[in-house]
Length: 143
Picture 1 (cartoon, one colour):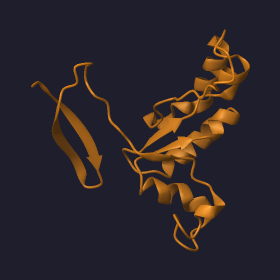
Picture 2 (cartoon, rainbow, N blue to C red; picture 1 turned 180 degrees about the vertical axis):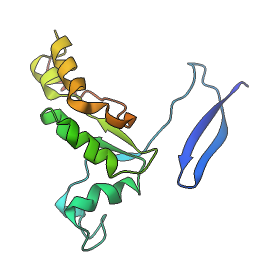
Picture 3 (cartoon, helix red, strand yellow; picture 1 turned 90 degrees about the vertical axis):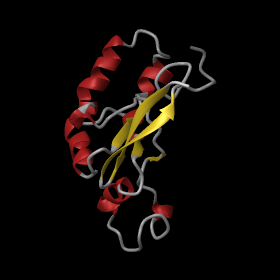
């Protein structure tokens, strides 16, 4: 059976493992993460007791390899925000930046060129840690 090389990042360095090749092509990285990080019920449970709210992203990013950014769904973020979030996370950490609801719920994925340009111009690609870009389309909306 053909094999492909997959790389996984670890705190101490990079480990290479051999996995069977998929008949559909190369496999991508699978990252388990959370959707957002600022939830009051998590304080003292997921986060250590007494952790400052401003340190929650830093803490969560050291427990999981990926977090979805929810704020980008509700409004365009500033480049400074993406840079600050990037600076709070370790090397190799990946943000899944949720696409704008304006694109999915208001434009319904039609004539989105300008809206997508604005989304990507907002700084979403700062530092190369932002991928993938999921779009959350509601089943109630006919596309």
